[in-house]
Structure formats: structure tokens, C-alpha cells
Image 1 (tube, rainbow, N blue to C red):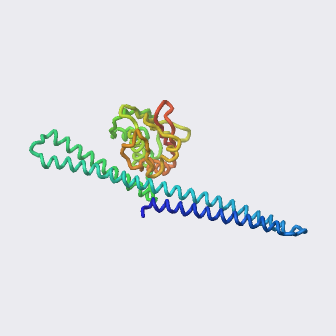
Image 2 (cartoon, rainbow, N blue to C red; image 1 turned 180 degrees about the vertical axis):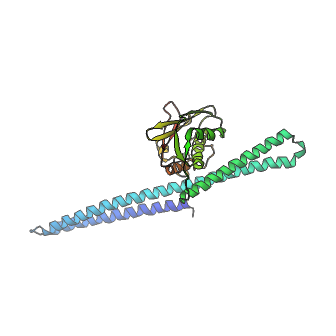
Image 3 (cartoon, rainbow, N blue to C red; image 1 turned 90 degrees about the horizontal axis):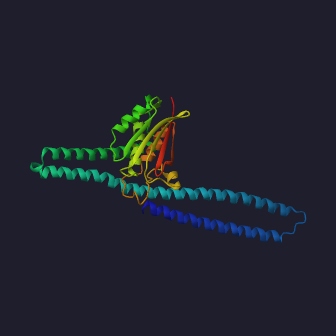
Length: 304
């Protein structure tokens, strides 16, 4: 039976159990009230005992409600996680298959039409195959990184780094349709793991580009914010509602929006960002773009 089916069955059983417990409690209350009316105790001993029983019942009932509430929340989270995992399996299968299929088609063209392909066209095909294989490698690395995070196998090696130079280096190697603008404080130096810091910046910019129009602008800001270096990635995309902001860093979570439903992704990027920021003793915030449509992701990392 599929995991999602099992989760739904568990929830049905859970609600049946709640119904049974409530029915039993109601019967218990009825019996106590009936019994109390039949007791003739002028000394008040029976009434005191009834009050004690009522108090014990009240404590039991409160604890039961609290327990049921948390069990219910666990069931709901399990069902949601099951659904997200199913969506992840479908999306990652598609994401992995696409570059493999595309590369295969390009190579078949080279093999079957080798004599009719000039050197410029051949070079263009080589570049496309290289791009697809690079994309495939990045997808695999992202899945492996998230798996290592779940198993607490990530070790960060910190070194003092001029953060503006590092951001400039990372952005210079990216290629998106949006315009890139950087407003960076050149004097900020913090301790980071340079390898994983690159994953933070790349994933934030990739997320901004994925959900933004091609003719829009992505802005990367770097400034001092008290005891923290604040890195902002500002986009002019579709934005997030209140519920999406609360769940955007969950594993396998993807934005489901009619404007972006055809966008590529695995739902791991922002989860990885959040975990890596925590590993750097920092925090990440998500807010609306104050200048209009879009989102601002702000990473705060402690200053050296």
C-alpha cells in the first residue's frame, strides 16, 4: 500500500479512537452524576470524594486533549511529508531524466549526421551537452548534500573571508536571464566555509531567477546589521503568501502557483540554504519586497 494511503488510514483510525474515548468519557460522567444523586451522606464524605473524582477526571481530560492535539499534529505533518516526498520523487525523476535524454539526442545527431555538421555547429552541440551534464551533476550534488544533512554528516571548515569578493566571484560564474545588480560593503570580513557558502548564494539566486520574469532584476545587497553581516537577495518575482513563508524552508517544499507551475526544481534548494546558514551560526529571513512585487531573502551571519 502506498505511504500516503497508510497515512490516511492512520488518520481515520485516530479519529475513530478519539470518538470512542469521548463516548467513554461521556458515559463515565453520566454514571458519576447518577451515582452522586443516589448517595445520602450527611457528613459530606461522599460529596468530597465526588469532588476528588471530578478533579482527577478534569486533569485526565486536559492531559488527554493535549496528547490528542500533538498526536493529531504529528499525523498531519506525516501526511504532508508523504505528499511532498511523492511530489519530490516525481520531480527529481523528471529533472534527472531531462539532461540525460537531451544529451543523448545531441550525441545521436553527431553520430548520425557527422559529415553534415560543420565545426561551429559541432562546437555548439558540445557546449549544450556540457551544460546538460553540468546541470545533471548539480542536481545529484544537491540530492547528496540534503541526504548528508539529514544524517548530520556535514562538517564546516571556517576561514576568515572578505565576503564581498566571495559574492562577486560566485555571481560572476552564474548565467541567468535576469539583470544582476550588486550593492556590497567592501570591508566586511567573516568566518565562513567557502565551499558551502557558495551553495547558499547559488541556491538563493537560483530560487530568485526561477520565480522571476526574464526581464526583471535580482539585487544582491551586503551590509552591516549590528553584530551580523546581512546578505539580501531581492527579486521581482511572484512573491510568497503568509503560509508559503512559513513552509518555504521545509524539505521537498515547492511553490505551487499557476504562474510558475512549469518551473523546474526539486524542493531542496531553500532547505539546504536554511541548514547551511544554521551551520554558520546565522539565521535566514523571508519578507516581501518593499519596493513592489517579489521577495527578499536575508541571511544574517555573525561578524568576525
